[in-house]
Amino acid sequence: ASAVLALQLQAEDEAALDPTMLAAQFQEYEAQFFKEDAEQWNGHGDLMHSPFKREHLSLETMDKATVFSVGHGDLLEKDFWEVLQCSSIRVLYDVRPTDYRGELYSRHQRFSVAALRAQCRTRGIFYKSMPIGRESAYGTLAHLASDEGKHTLIELAWQATRKRTAFLGREESWRDDPRLAVAQEFVRAGHIVEHIRPDGGAEAHEPVAEWPDWLAREEERLRLLEKKRQAGEMERPTKSRLDRSTEAVAMSLARPAEEVDAMEEMRGAANQKELVVAQRKLARYQRKADEKGAMAKKVVTNVPEWIHEDARKQAEWVASKKQEKEERDKSGAATAEAGAAKAGAAVASAAAASDDHACGEDAALDVAGDKDAALAAYLDGDRSDEKRYLLGLALAQELQLADGAEAGDAWSEGRCCAAQQPLVE
Image 1 (tube, one colour):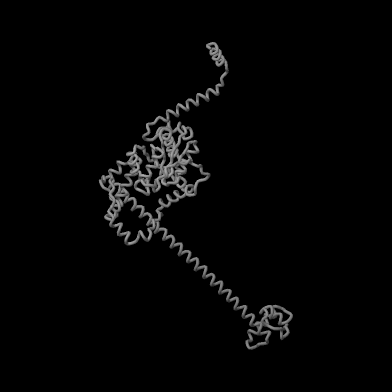
Image 2 (image 1 turned 180 degrees about the vertical axis):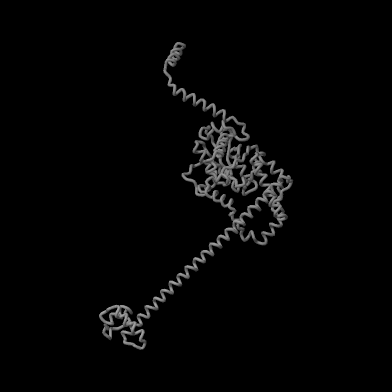
């Protein structure tokens, strides 16, 4: 056996190995080592914070994982957590899009960021809010194409290879929710996506041939909305008749104002970005409370002095923007009035020219009528008006017709009968 092994080793040494194949093999080993080093993370903070990780981690090269998708819709809190329990979810990433302020609003208070974070903490579930599709990124598709969107998906895949991980959307049906674009990206990279249904079951993601119209045109709509907002042309929402009724107004005034604890809001921020959003929101609440006084719907308590200062700065900025808009509207109105006056003058000039032209045509018609009458008088031998008779004679001579009947037909278009007198030379 030792002799056979020695001969095998000798044959391998004598065999000529391809240097290109060896280089590719070692390069593959090196890339694998780099990927393993890049995946070293404790699960807190940002996975893609370093240039080394951004260089060696990608969604396509990571180990393939199964990622779950769920939407809360109008489910009750108890039903929602039972649905997650059916799939043994231990990590929940909140990818619901935010508005232009960076704030996330939910139809139900139980699914707000603060409420979900507290509920996950009590159940031992890791929760992280990483919005995909915020307005400042121009929607879901544009955000997924950016580096930030790609890094979010890589972090989700990293979690999915270690624990049962799900990403959260707004709608119960994944086909009506922007998270279908997130699922599409995972499937395209070779991962598996299971959509959790409201009954607790799961279905595999079916790749879509083309995006729905509401998703494909989202970027266009948000860019137009941004331009309107910057130009101050945003339309105020129109309230229905029921919202403007006396009963609705009375109920709104009788309802006590909601108290927002400033310190609690800031303590609930998980990172610096959420803290900045919370501070701006508190300053906006304080500004509106100062403007509306007793009619304010939200009142901020335990307010630090710098929040008051931010509220005053916001109020000054809003007042300056309103003044600019008023001046711009006045300037536009003056320009429109000048244009209307100029257009009115042009119309009046055109009307005068038209009247002059009409008068000229009327005069020409009068002259033609006088010629017809003069020629008829000559043909009839009517000498009651000597001038008219002589004018008819001159006209007949000018035409040089064979007889008076032909002359009468040429000028009066059939008004006269046959000639009664011969043409006078």
